[in-house]
Length: 426
Image: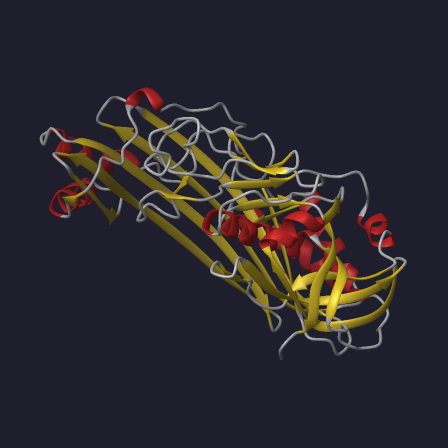
């Protein structure tokens, strides 16, 4: 990291301080090293992203604008654009007394390009010994630094690092599936986890037959469960309100302040101190992430703001989803199904239908009878409403894994009772 955020931030502050308006300056600088292996060769990429954003309010107006760069010119451009973009609206900025930072674990050092490459070569060597065909390997190691300063004297910074590994692999004549794993840093644990997930694909060739359309017990691997959890939180935020039946096995929280999960942060996208937001716990739907404005200035409900990048204003959403572990291994969860399907890897995007309060996903599936694999199908479609997902969770496993999606997600395998399955489209 070059450490060049301050010139842009200081220039933006100087420009805005002359206006007498309430304001905040948000700056972020990120760096990513990427590697991609396919058709026998490696491709390398190095990317930098940096910029500054300004929000302001006063006189019954509000404004937001951003500019790329870390130099003085970027800060001035963002400030002047925010002033020019003002429109009538309520003040969205939290007051100084509500702002603060939570103590979080320090992130590990980001791997250098050479360290990532050495890890990639070790990973490729391990995967080449497995009885599966490796079509593609992708690795990305990223780090970012964030600075938030307000006109009322609040200033705080945060840093995060992470590594994502994706492997596209196939077995026999089956279509390839995508394995996704994220971790704070490279190391033997990440290597072992990737190898374990790819090795699961290398079992005996099973008879190919689609699921009988109807209700089935369903065991989701952590990869599929992670995507489902993110979609489920979206449904909870946008779907109908009212009392819902929630199974006791749910223990889902937005663990923004850590120590659990992949990316603990000291403050949210607006500067409110991070806290644990219980989403599904104790048999009920708990709090949902809200911005300061959406929470009506209630500090007990606010603190759920996220920023996808420096160029985006704060919006509500989860930042560090964590589903609590159970005590059963994935094998023990499988044996709890007399007859059901295990979904191991997504084969398409998760589709959320907020209007109908439901979601659809397609995944590679294996039918299990008393824990034994008897049948497979490369594209099993799961359809479920939010209410059924909340009520039908039977158990969580002890095999947590992390993913880096629109938010960080950490989850074990999840066993649901009686969800709708059908043959997926080709």
